[in-house]
Amino acid sequence: MNTFTSTVTNSQHASRLHHDRLATVVTLLKYTYGLVPVIAGLDKFAHLLTDWNKYLSPVVADILPFSAATFLGIVGVIEIIAGVLVFVKPKIGALAVSLWLAGIVLNLLLTGQYFDIAVRDLVMAIGAFSLYLMLPYRGEAQ
Image 1 (cartoon, rainbow, N blue to C red):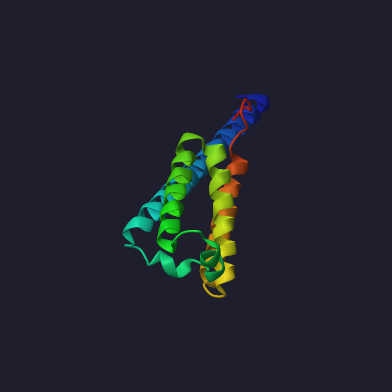
Image 2 (image 1 turned 90 degrees about the horizontal axis):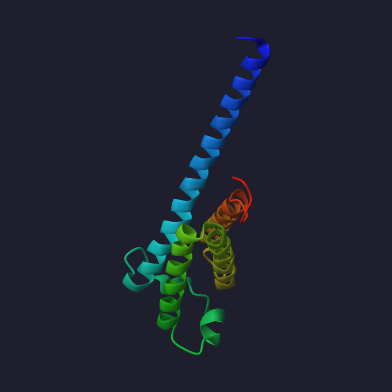
């Protein structure tokens, strides 16, 4: 094999490995940001993972025109929709989950506690936004 053919073959192989790794990361992130919101959303009704009421900021609770339980039900439905959206329309879904998580961070900061969870959710928001950035725009080659 001549040097040119060898270089092209090595370059193609390296490009393929890069593409495969990127595809694996995108798939992992899609499942993460698709499933986690759906599970958390469903748990807003079951309260098996935690008592979600304690994470609602009193500032937010005070301005609601309905009960905290009703609000958490609405939150659960929105989370389920956002998670499903990641599977159906990943680009839009990833951005929606990222912005939703940023809102959760703001709510947690307003509680004056749960800063550890706020940091975790901020990291998750960055991860969801990273997925958004990795996905191609409509009509863009992958």
